[in-house]
Image 1 (cartoon, one colour):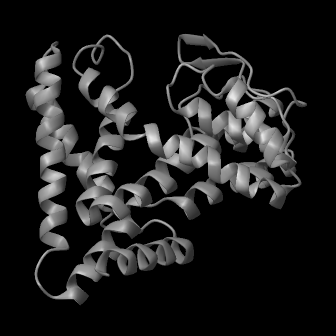
Image 2 (tube, rainbow, N blue to C red):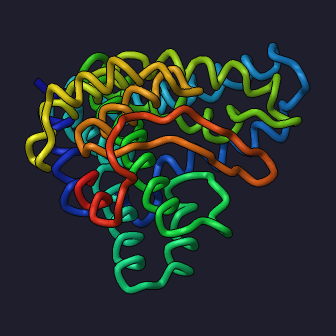
Length: 284
């Protein structure tokens, strides 16, 4: 019973306090992974795969030590501490609502400054409507990454599942995107993250259908939009989350996204109206 009690306690800590303000384990992992990347980087998939395995193995060992031993209370406390560190439900909602508040004050400049805390789009020229869309899409995608996926992997594999999933997700954010430096080196991290999120993303869509009535949505519409549009996304997983949110909120997501000097024209998800500011709070 150590794992379920620890997961419940960790989720309660996240709901009450948000991310740890000091000695955040994910930040520490990112710092060490960044140092390892500078030492091990080579323009090859083999080097990237070795780097990925090394970093994840370190996270698994640390989790095993933190939540190991024969004493059930120690195991429960270890799982709770790791869960608190890897979950991000409260922080995700808080960041989105800060953007909502800035837009409500008419301060689009503040909203643009806040948006990079949620997603990687270039906010400089975004209109209020585009900031709203980006925020809703980020809440949808990160509901899986920061809440559903770590809890699912934690339920399946305890503390190593929590830490291993967060390590994979963090490495993908660090080296998994396509660029001249990471096109080959980050391949293993990106593919492993895709694999780790196959089930959580679809579970997120199912949970979104169940939650749709809480914001005036229709589970049947959510299911229809998810089935029709979930595959119409560059990511094999994010589209399921975003399509489900589009259906539950009865809005249309997708369109043109600008990432620095890279532009993506994505298919539309959902057939509703364009999202409005109030949809940020509904998404949260």
